[in-house]
Image (cartoon, rainbow, N blue to C red; front, side):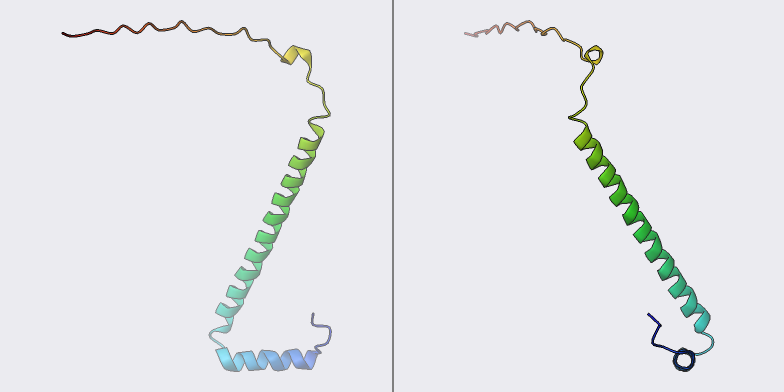
Length: 93
């Protein structure tokens, strides 16, 4: 990125920034830039982790149909019958 900029150009840019912002604002400016860079790196790292988790989940989903389900884990369930409720109508006359 700074391959084409030499030492003299960087000193000139720093001098212009010093004139524009003043000596009192430079530490605050540096702190703000540092926090921004740190936040950017953190979000990039989190995005990489989320992407890796998604790929792992896809691989597990693709491998799941290939695996056979052991018979001991499959339980047969008897059909459950619920008694029918009788409805009585009361007529008032």
